[in-house]
Image (tube, rainbow, N blue to C red; front, top):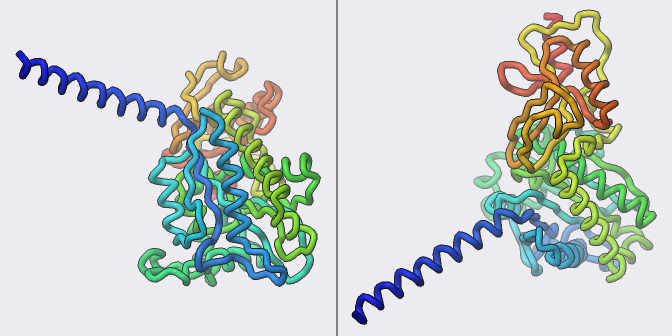
Length: 373
């Protein structure tokens, strides 16, 4: 009898253990996972300064402030690439985010320049490299030379090569649109709420963004080489204020995803706009399907008109952790422009046209050029 009771007890305890694991896993699945990355660290101090400020230290303090704030929200799970002054290889930072199947990756840095330049910048991945962008990308990517096995880990990637910096953008391309949304919110908060100079939202070929498989941004919180701004970045008050505005941007970003707000696509005028194309006499493009992208969300909504302000002909595609929603499907470019206008009048003011050929998304410009061949 005692042996039977013992066996039952073991089974019961095992059952409770499994239930506990399942419950814990479910809770984690429900949380919005944000990976916070404090740039540099350890033997890599970051940009050199004459005033003694260290980029690695400021970046870490901002990250810890931001993480502490987000952790108070039960809907969030925060993961840090580092919480101390230690050196991390670039590929390790991306691996942490990918292993966590994160919803966002936010990397915090400080800028530097030989002049008294000042202001904030937020970067998303891209291949539109100006001479200045190539110089910045080279400086940020050259940290790989501090790693023991960089030849193995980066498969011949050369930070000095424009070809290398352009090539690394391909894998993360599907997340750029969402990265732009978050980046714009961060820069808007810096300029409008903190009254700081925003140098804008920019695209740059950065390895730390390239290898992450989720929306990712790199925030340059200001110039530590500027006498006034450097002191601000190095102060507790400045770090708290910066972290607060990034936190608010992340909260707003998640809110829009949860609510499936279609007009949350806020594309910077300086970035490539797929709909800013020359008019064409020919409107039918054989072999190409045009659609109007109206929304992206973490939620899988039924592609029905009642979920999309009465719009008809709604389709849905899953890309990574996001669901993209489209209005219309036609080879007639003139018709899809009319459908885009209809969607805009319904409230999707930042919707845009996309093109597909053989089941793969291509640029609208490429699609239109194919019609003339």
